[in-house]
Length: 232
Image (cartoon, rainbow, N blue to C red; front, side, top):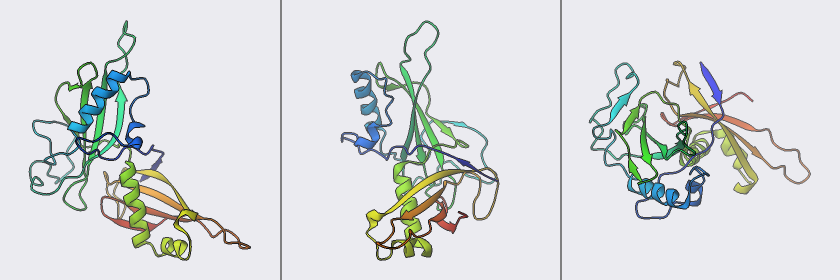
């Protein structure tokens, strides 16, 4: 079963030692003071590039999928990481504002076709330091990042003949797209639970004196690198 779920595009991975890109800053909670923003940005820069797939000494939350391995086997392979969400803690009674946020990263599995993990850090905005253990969420459905969306569009343009035909002979700026993130709850070829999947609909401007071409909807499975046609 596939459940459609609107998700906000989130942030791309951050480079250590650089200022946050403008799109990344949009994910920062708007109610932070300047000092809190600076401390949080410093934390994000320090955690931008993981050195291993499974964080050291992390607490694993959730049931491991049948037959899945999550510890150590991918350590020698390059690890990607996308920051996808930052959420503020609710203030406790008698406290005006909470001084903590949760930072969520999605890490694709270095083994192609296997489900990835979500990594959660709790940050104290008063110090810019992490509180408690890093958590690995095995079954979290986190938003896709803007970088993942760009990858989905690139996959569609590379693997879908219908999308290629829509772009053919047109300025790329005249072709637009919108998306819905899909929640995969059960196995349905080619999708498995935990796969990162989006439905992308491409539309193009009409040529002068002609009608607009039909929209082109596709389903992109980022986990498996598969693109299939979707119903309109």
